[in-house]
Amino acid sequence: MNRPFHLSLSVTGFLCLVLMGAGSLQAQDSAEEAEQKRQMELAQSLLGKTPDRAAILYFLAEQHALLQEPHEAIVNLKESLDLREGFDPAGDPIFSGLKSSPDFQKLVEQAHHDFPEVSHAKLAFVTKEKDLIPEGLAYDPTQDRLLLSSLHLKKIVGIPLQPSGQIKDFVPNDRYNLLPVLGIRFDPSDATIWAASWIENGKTELLHFAKDGSLLGRYSPQETGKHGFNDLIALRNGTLFITDTPGNQIYRFDTKSKAFQVIPASRPLLMPNGITVSENGEEIYFADQFGIFRLNSRTGSCIELKPETHTTISGVDGLYWHHGALIAVQNGIGSPRIAVFQLSKEGSEVKKITILEYRSSFSTLPTTGAIVGDDFYFIVNSQLDNLNGDRILDPTRLEPVRIGVLSLR
Image (cartoon, rainbow, N blue to C red; front, side, top):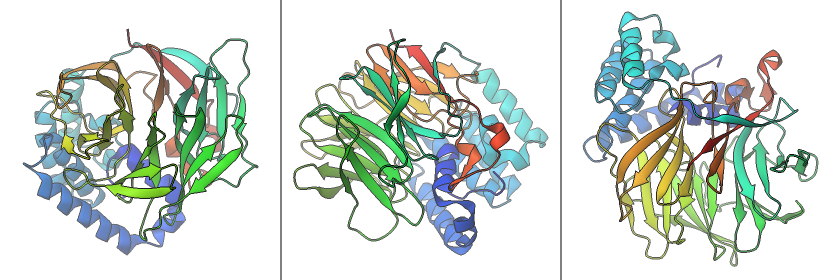
């Protein structure tokens, strides 16, 4: 990026910058600084109150780097990495100004020693279009296809899983004057498709599409303030749960009344993002910058998951349920990785973490994925760092979108 962004961890910060545009940000410097200070105060207030101390220290190191306070950045970064949870600042553009520092280089060496490269993924699909800048991926079992959302072209692409199928638009970009499209999910209650969309100035919409791609409805929250729908999950009874990243909220959406209801969490949230649901449809798991929560969809009770010692479950973008485990795309911990979080029997703790992909050619800049049976398909190279509002920063850097696949067997 040609200017630093002030909104939390790496890829979420990229996303906020992309959706707001640098021009809008430059006109809001004082508001940004106030928001940055508010976030730092929130993070500091959570020290000792949330299970992952290293995640908060890493976040504070980023903020100090943005404030051009290298000493404070290194101090917090060292304390975070000394806990050996998986943070790797080498892949975090926020620390670009520190990369020549011997202290920073030593910390990167330590992170790479503690967490070596892991590579298991294979290439599944490649798009012809280079300028999609994708963010969301979902599986439509009725058509046996993946659905890929586009930020830049503001559309949804269908990718058949059968070799004989053709990649083509599910919702073309010239049809409904859409905002940039983010999270996307199949609705098991009626086989329709839901998607989240969001652009600058807090304008956001929940989109509902029929099986043929025709628009059934578009809905926005009524509350004032910044809002940005990011990811969502659809339950079998038709209820939706949606993460509002800049609004720091989780919504329940009733598809009959078309009403949004804010769901309280067990602590203040900072940029909630990925969300999924357990097999029985009762437990909702959602992530913010510092961890993962379990919400009971029936009672409303909410707890924060406790991670295994020397591991982090923070910085999750895409989050998915698979046979009692959570599959996570962690792109807010420096260098991105894809991991399996094996849950305890009662689902309140992460008992074991298995890293599936890390520091490989398949972890360039992933955002989300989709589970098909025992396979996990995921966006390899979203290219979020090459988009500023509606403008591609460097067209020569664009490349076809790669979809990778990992076996979860």
